[in-house]
Length: 417
Image (cartoon, rainbow, N blue to C red):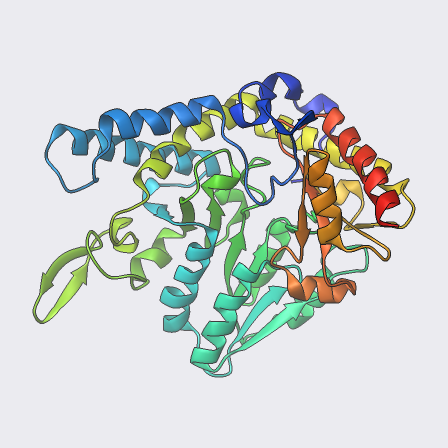
């Protein structure tokens, strides 16, 4: 993912797309049009996604893979169709490589437990970057504690880009797992995915990519990335909450022990033990996120119709506008790299002002942003600040939204000072 020239992608009409999202048609406070800029946390749902959710609950809902009655067969068909669509959407070779779970966090934990406990031992190393979300730090720290391994962190340059030289210097024959984010959820930094994966594989390491901030915003191709594991969440790509996707290299998944035990994930159970089922059932114990998965299909259809290249181009344009307008406000520090190295995320801090206070007052103007450490405390420590404000854009945001953010922020800053 990188900045796309206007000639390489169709443009989108964000104002028109906004009409597809019922939640955006309201005033969040009296006389205050909702300006939703917290898309890195979760995205809103177009009408077609909501309609599929309602139809599922009203007409076809039943448990999958178990019943022989009509509702179960329909739910199963719709559920597996969603798996096929996800596989096609990210360029996977087979739907068997697509494992459904509750979210990116569970996907990473699954790999850390199932693959990690079987492959990482005393003296081994796990390489992360300092810009990781806690979900891509804590499971590896827990693995290191269980297995006597060491977690190491690649640093960033002062402009927010990954220090690839430092990353490479930390790789060695002891490195068993390299886990990194495709796009920083704080800095908006777009990492050189293919290069980092190649460097990791050259030293024999397995690679996991946290793609929660990439898959919803730009074309994603598993064949080009060549990663061993990739995790992302449906709720960040217009779908319902409760659905996560873990993509895995099939040869690894077939030898990896299951993470959770229970119904569906077995071939046979006796009083003496069990044998696991085939992929993907092997990693989908219990009742899965049925409606969340089924309603991810229309979300994918919507993203395809708009176009991922167009979405990326639009978001970067808005990010550039926000960087320019917010920089004009006295005391604002924009976090992260230059526009050509970032996605549609703009985090900032203001000298002497508390990000939480800023967020609360912006909300009174109808502007929804995120404030805090964004589940990235080590990164904020590296930046020398405890927390920050984050505005994150999506396909339904407009230049007017950026202007509303800047205008409201000027008022808030004056008030707080």
